[in-house]
Amino acid sequence: MKPYLLLSLALCAPLNAVAASDEELRALRDELKQLKENYQQRLEQLESRLQQAELRAAEPPVAAPVAQVRNEPAASASAYNPAISLILAGNYGNLQRAPAIPPTGFAMSAHSPAAQGFNLGESELGFSASIDPRFRGVATLALGAAGGVSVENAFVDTTALGNGVKLRIGRFFSGLGYLNEVHAHAWDFVDQPLVYRALWNNQLGEDGVQLKWLAPTDTFVELGAELGRGRGFPGSDRAKNGSGAGVLFAHVGGDVGVSHNWRVGASLHQTGQSDWQSVGVPDLLGTPGGVTDAFTGDVRTGGLDFVWKYAPEGNSSSTSLKLQGEYFRRQQSGLLSYNLATTDSYALTQSGWYLQGVYKFLPEWRVGLRYDQLDPGTATVGALNAANVISSYGYTPRRTSVMFDYSPSEFSRLRLQLARDQSRQALPDNQLFLQYLMSLGAHGAHGY
Image (tube, rainbow, N blue to C red):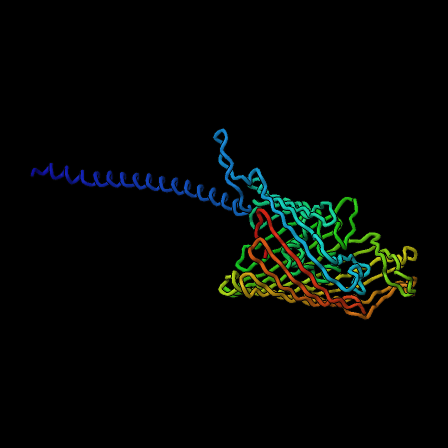
């Protein structure tokens, strides 16, 4: 080969290598760009599917999808028609004493007595649906045994605030304690513990706003705050600007292995009472039938609650055990009008607690035991009423209840409950209750 040909080949070789390298780089860049585009498209699809799945999970089962019209996106029936449920409840009560008599020392509290004989009970008609990707609505109407309809719950929840934050607006059961948010058909006993009946008139309901935050941690941490009208006892429903009651609460929980889980909580409720009148209050003068007293002042209640659940290997369908308890302490401070005539200072601290356990020993059978106790406290009474008002009753109201229930399915339950009620001094009462609970239509799962 001639020398100039060798020189030409030597000079061209590096140029060809460089050209090949540039082509590879362009190909790699194109491939990388395509991968990024595919990844972004796939990510958007997954986010869209996740959002749709969350919306479906927040809704009870519904009927078949509504047909598409004018090539609009398909939507589930619940997007237009709320899920409807009806809880039918009834009971029979056999009591030896008049149920209208309040626990000793709590005549100035609200009192929700048990019913004697056959009683329709309170049935519930519920509606729920996702409104759009940002809101969900729930309404529960209580059908009274004597007729009439009352609004038990009617609220809107946000579903897209993110970061574990949820806002609730409307009428709702307060998040304080453990049992307060539980609807009557989901109670483990026929009635509420004595402390709920005496301090909250069975349940604290509120018109207002509730803000909850769920922490992004492995351990369950929930913080909440409420501002409301103050319509539920021990508040006074007053027409005024601003709020009439406030609540703070916190819950912490977690799992212990696969078979155990727990939750503990603390709560604080603050409100005011305005001319709260109680009829038939005993007095030192022995007025037949008692007197009518009125209280105006501040009311603050603090509480602690805990729940522990056990299910073998996390499967509660056959066997499970639940233990729970709550303690509340209420402080009142203000003015008391004795028999609506003589007014002077008045302060009282009262408390109560309960402890209960429910054991499912067969898939369809459960047995439960509950003990309740109240402390009427000792009142500090102004000089003008010192000779009129009983400051200390020297008695501890208490009650023991045992229940058996049979649930052929998740939609029906029959219950027998026996109680030894010693909440009224010198008036012990042996009580028997029979109850049925039947669920019709769509019904979502209950909370923890």
